[in-house]
Length: 423
Image (cartoon, rainbow, N blue to C red; front, side, top):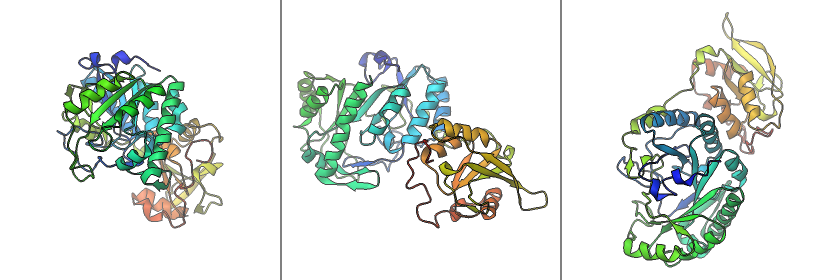
């Protein structure tokens, strides 16, 4: 874990003019709705969280990182800050961090989250070398939180009002404690909202400091169109400075925040998001490097050899199919699946087993195996029905979604996707 705060411009103001950061927009989904947030709009001249000019897959983010470093060698920090929340997109977030750790271990790794979904991934965050985490906490009283958050989502259940705010707060405070137990540096972002929490924000400082948070960033509300808080005034220095001074007695204060975009890149005072917008969008269109023509086969998870009807994680072996010289398709053979219980390595091993296959067809698949297979140019498709019907669609370049979902729950809805054996 790289805990060199001197090279992190957000945690150390002295380095803001010489050390840069890049935000990799790989996390589009969010698990809460704040009353000040609108992620619909993107203007290259607008700097605020939730805005990005493109969304990247993990392998695309790794390629983009290479191009950014070539153009701006002063980058010292690689972070994920949305445009949704990293832990509403845990598979994408963790895989991106894994790839960066392999290619650029000298960088400081950073995440910015609302804290709602972080707890199950604390050990993963530490193991991947993420040394700096920011959690946005704007209230430590559920009654006030209920005014800030329209809803929070826990799995598939949506909570509103004080109940939702209470659940979110419990997760946030537990996340600070868990991160500090693992030696991670924690920054707390607090949005100062006039008439809502401006008289409460110092209490946020005290509670978070008591749990070991290292620094706080009081961010003035930026009223955004089409949000419940769009008509509230943006608090000025006359509001923010006294609050920082009072809170600074219990926790260090960040005073140079630029309210960065989810695709921010460059120095804090010299953001290059607009200049690198084309590079980001080009990377978002990249395909895995190996051409599909070099992968003539398709793997199938099947129980009896006629239907695609087995969960990827349950399959003990895969049938391998190819095109027949006389038309139609032929069964090439059968290959054993890697043993279960090996975590993400299981899916890397499966990708090696299927390295001459352009796709694997199954009845359900979790997010983690799907991502890891995709990184190795094996697309995992959820389909239902006869094998030969699906093969025809694959080889003719059709849309496999027409073969998906005719049985309830086949799209991995009950799957954890952890890589531990269920898929």
